[in-house]
Image (cartoon, rainbow, N blue to C red; front, side, top):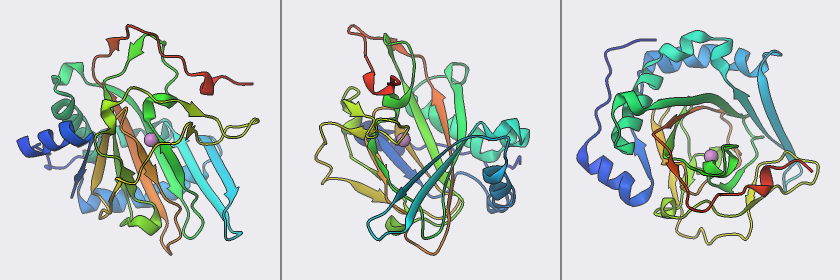
Length: 250
Ligand code: NI
């Protein structure tokens, strides 16, 4: 849904991202677009044609914990590529990655749904650990995550470890032999300095591809409906190839 809202990125926001590896924004799209996205969201999550992953576990209180991830929802709803959200996420990517528009490449859209009272947590991870790219590639990329519901710590807002983007990709592990389950850090990392980013619907957080991040279970009465999109800047070549044994199927 096109609108006149063109995000501009301030110098202090660029500096914050460079220093911390993440940034929160009050708004990345319009209330009208949030309303439209809410209308089309549930049918997309339920669509049998959707390429999806559904993670389900039993939480400590005995209730189910669920995350549904819908990949490439634009295959069912091409209008998603014409949204103010996506146009502004692309502008944000260019500004924060420090690259011109022609060097920002779309890396995919995904819906991440955690149902009310039954959303499971997303363990601490770096996005680049999940990407099955050639081992010589060092990504220069970011993700822009937007909730369609107000989010708090207890509904699973994003949490970041400031400065962690300066690490390389850390060792991760597939926690269940017959996976897939969300990856976990192995060994674990001290995340006591984590910063939670509660947001209003239509706000956004963005994080670099090596920023450590986490989202808690959704124990609230509200669904946690979110979209996330990746944009890649030009990748670099690694001196030492990065092996990702955690992505190999047993
Ligand atoms: Ni992630």
